[in-house]
Amino acid sequence: MGLEKGISRIGTVSGVIFGIFFSLVVTAYSFEVGLFNYFFNQNSRQNPLAGLYVDNFVADNFMDKTNFDYEGAKQAGYSDEEINKYLASTKEEKTESNLPPGYELVEDEPENHPNFDNRSLQLQLTNIFSVYLPTFFIVILVVLISFILGLYGVKGVAKTINWVINGFRE
Image (cartoon, rainbow, N blue to C red; front, side, top):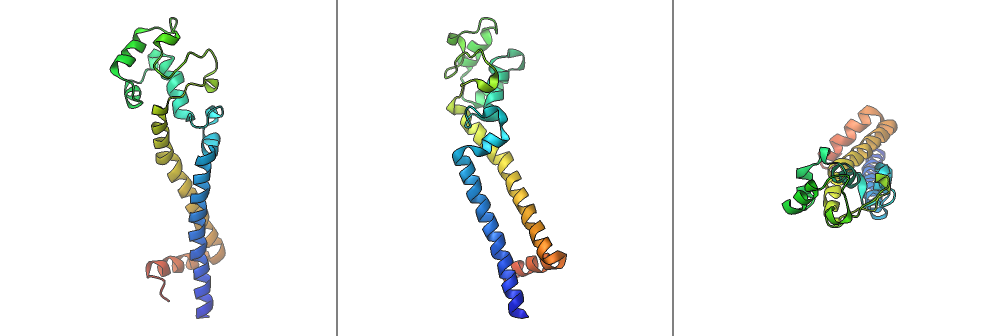
């Protein structure tokens, strides 16, 4: 009976470890091929790296001064001179010459514009690591706990957790 319990617990722990490893691999692969942004940011299908934050930043702030985010522009790496030059222009007068560097004038829907600046990539990655990644791991953790509950019941989960905390001793 003791051996059976030991094998069962080792199977559970190794299943949890495999689940965490598998979720890390899937997450890394998702970043690599841009699937993560594809599913979470429907506006960025044309350019998975651009992401929702960059689309909204360009569409809302650089095309409409009433909603201009000065701090966001500073974080994206624009100088006071570039920001003031933009603010001095009007929406009607907007030309290629008075857009911030790296952007081009696009008379199209925001989700189709090719405007993407590498300075904004860091902000997008910050959003991914601070919002999406923790959510992803919480979901995986809930799924694993549910799986263990389904296999062993509440007492089995409590015993397994206690066994792990006590250093894998019987």
